[in-house]
Length: 223
Image (cartoon, rainbow, N blue to C red; front, side):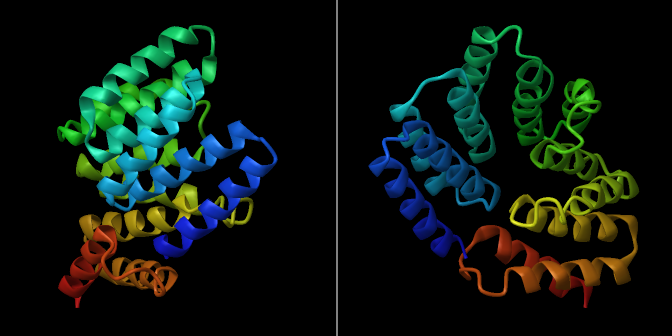
């Protein structure tokens, strides 16, 4: 699945290059890198983020690259870039209240500090109800904090947006999150169903994707 996604991203980037749409090219590069990071393909994620940063250093690109670095474990680079972007856009409400705190929250999650991550994201709650990545980060923090029912509710809120954004890949990550949240809550029946739904979505995915391997192992333990 990610291999095919890479091919499609390359095609889109080539088309944008021909039309001299540099911003579209860089946005495609950072988005692809983000998906790689969320699927735990860290090497590919970092490679894509590095390439995007070479093409553009606007505040929005810098913040997007910081997000990828944070999720891929490049924490020093991520911290430096998120602060740089936030400093360059002090009056950007969405950056200051949603996107920058989200990246900082991811860094806290890397250190297993979910309560600190949730505290950082409090300001985003009134603004991010259609921002699936921000919601996903909050749901992941709730899951790490051991708050299964709250986490399941947040993951389900993401999935409720599916009709409006059917192509949003965050939906499939949220489906796995929901399975994990139900398992944590002790509802193994709902957890099995959620895992089955996730595995159906990823049935054509590359078998070596780290996140998919994790999901299959977790699902097997529920049988």
